[in-house]
Image 1: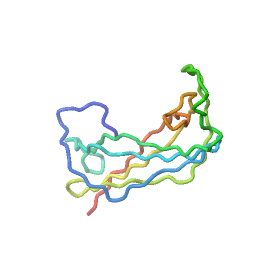
Image 2 (image 1 turned 90 degrees about the horizontal axis):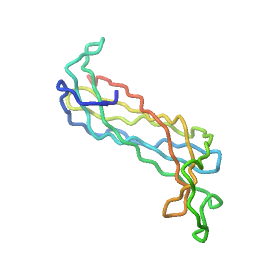
Image 3 (image 1 turned 90 degrees about the vertical axis):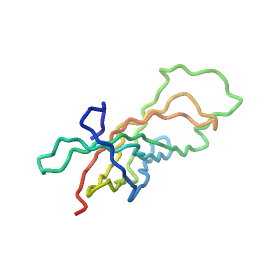
Image 4 (image 1 turned 120 degrees about the horizontal axis):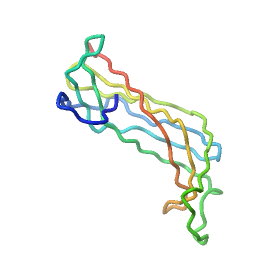
Amino acid sequence: MEIQKATDDLTELGFEPVDEGWNEYRLSDGSHLRIRPIVIKVFKSQQMTIEGTPVIGYAASNILSVKVPIELKKNKAQDGEPTDDERTEVDFEVVKEFWNEFKIEGDLSIRIKLVVSRVIRTAKYNSFGEPIYVVSSGNVANIQSRI
């Protein structure tokens, strides 16, 4: 579970990555999206699951990179600022989705899988002349005992 708001019954735990990788998606506009979650903090609650393990939460941030075909890049000679409402929804196909795993202090591990639900190409461009994409995603987590 992702922790939305800290409460008094949380204890921050140390963690180490066991296996981390990139999810990859082929976009219908010819671009190739790579995205992955970066875990920042892991917490243990005093609450217990029905299986008797502590409720574990985490804070994560996603990083992404898009390889854009040359025909989508903006020529530096082009000018004019786009409006915020110039957006195009882009269909995508999963190339690879990866479970990232982290060993948590104690005898537990957490596996996190980022799942993309929507990709939008904006009419704005980064400093490389590439369109800026907005990606909607969520993380699925699975806590496991290492015993």
